[in-house]
Amino acid sequence: MSESEQSDQGHHGPMKATWAVAASATLHCLTGCAIGEVLGMVIATALGWHDLPSILLAVALAFVFGYALTLRGLFRAGLKWRAALRLALAADTLSILVMEIVDNGVMLIIPGAMDSGLASVLFWGALAFSLIVAFVVTLPINKWIIGRGKGHAVIHAYHH
Image (cartoon, rainbow, N blue to C red; front, side):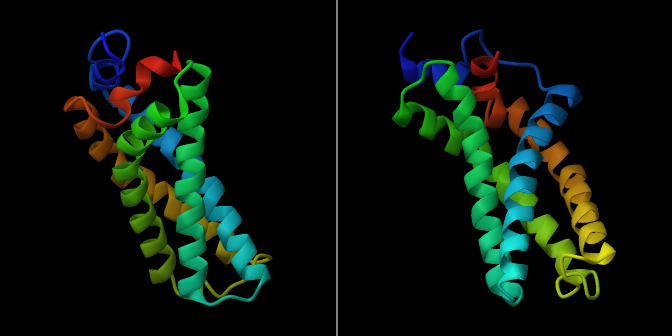
């Protein structure tokens, strides 16, 4: 089987789209997003940036860390850079995008959350809440994507 065929099916054929599998994929995505989101917000807040540049930095770092976590597993599985990058982009982009739209949207609608500062319970509480909401919204989307043989379905076998 060629590498491109493996990227479509993984090493062991298509995976079943269970809620547990979707939750695992969503938690994986949430981990990368949360690392990038928190780091971006901390840097932007420390630099005194306003909402838009803060969000742009947090989103950019969420994508970087989300892809990095996937790439790490693919490199461990022996894939070359180009194949691993293609798989990571295909597997994670929609999930990270949805998660970032939701968590940043929640942060923006909570009064004062973006301006409350790093020492504020409001900031950290709002950020934690926004990530939980993002997980809940992204979970059924990931289940649907995996059920179609896309998203984390194409890389799951490489992680085991």
